[in-house]
Amino acid sequence: MELKQQLKLSQQLVMTPQLQQAIKLLQMSRMELVETVHQELLENPVLEDQSEIAPDHSTDGRNGESRETAQPQEKPGDQGTRDADKKASEIDWDRYIENHAMQAPMPGGGMRGFDELPSYETTLTKSEDLIDHLEWQVRMSDLVEDERRFTALVLGNLDEKGYLRMDGVAPEEVVPRLAEEAELDPEDAEEVLAMIQRFDPIGVAARDLKECLKVQAEHWGMDALVLSVIDGHIADLEKRNYQAIAKQLGVEVEEIYDVAQVIADLEPRPARNFVSSEPQYIEPDVWVHKVGDEYFVVANDDGMPRLKISGFYRSAMKGNAEAKEYIQNKLRSAQWLIRSIDQRRKTIERVTECIVDKQRDFFEKGIEHLKPMILRDVAEEVGMHESTISRVTSNKYVATPRGVFELKFFFNSAIKRGAAQDDIASESVKQAIKKLIDSEEPKKPYSDQKLVELLAQQNIEIARRTVAKYREMMGILSSSKRKKYF
Image (tube, rainbow, N blue to C red; front, side, top):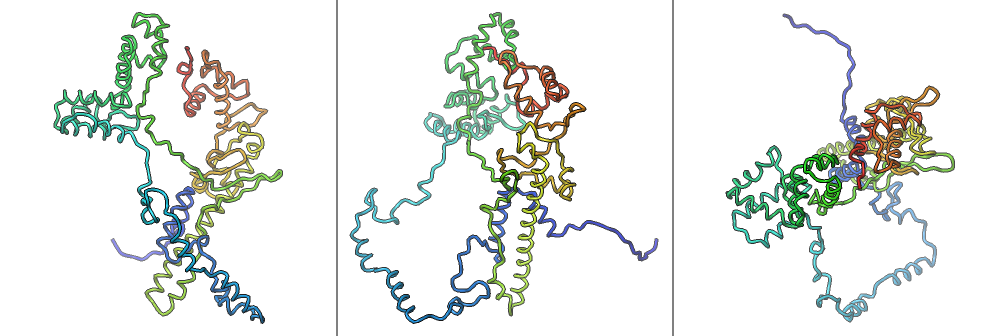
């Protein structure tokens, strides 16, 4: 072994802080970017939001000179005009106070001023959720201390559907475990749970679908045949295998049809009416406008802070070494952020322009004319790497004359067609399948093989398993589950 020096020439990619920040901002959605910019405005004193800065009337803005020195010299008579305008704009405070004292009191319990009004926080309301609704019913019930502890544990383990479940615990072991923690006898715990399940909504805190439906059927006094189907034939009922149920129970198929209609009116998700339905808003990153026969891509800057470097801190750097170093670091950070945001906007615009150019038939004629396109096609066109295109198109939305789409929507794999025809995009095939299913007869739905044959008539040659995959991706049930018996 020996020590020696050796020269070596190599190339490597160094991820500078500027590059890391640019990549991080590029893959952010619009709402995440706005939140990041607002956070940076709070932490970096050198940054300012230009859209929130009031115009400075004391300086000229170009060279910092006073506006009084920049204005031309007054002419004779201007002084008298200015004094008259100033006098007209002044407030007669004596008359204002006198009129204010003579005003009638504000309505609403004799309150005389805004100071006596209830605070803004006391006027806020929130919708009642499932737990609040059940807790109110528990307070109205006659329960002892250990039963209330058990009830609190039950309410704390309800999922979004209203079922009583614990991760990693079998349904039959949930109640004994909660009873042990609440120091309650397991038999008493089952009685308390049965009482909770008859709270409003009926069937809440059930351990599975069968128990949920059975509690509702018993509560509404349904006959023994309905209870028998719920007890032992839920799987066949889900598959709509009515003949098998009728054969096992020794009844006519028409009776099972009636039972299935009755069970369909029950609520399989007791917490449905208590789930928050707040809308999820989407803000497009770019707009596509059609002017004449041309399409133009415009970045959406509405609501985005307009960043600028504050000029106030330039004078603070003079004569103070510590302040100068701190402000210089913040200044560099601000410059990197502004440059990264500008680069992000330009990159999204370039990628969107390329997509619009390649998918012009889609914008002109509709989704049936969407062309196959992969990341490499756009990457080669704009001169970027595929990973960059992937970051640009993730969680980014574009508002077009045909609606709002995620940029990822325009990337589709190719489905081979006849030799005389171009390939078709997978998204167009999905829409073709959906149209066929929407037009089918409810009592005789198309099987996957039948869909293959119908698509072949449209010169779309795909396998049956591909049809099944696309159907499941769109959330469409199989033909046996789509069939309408009544």
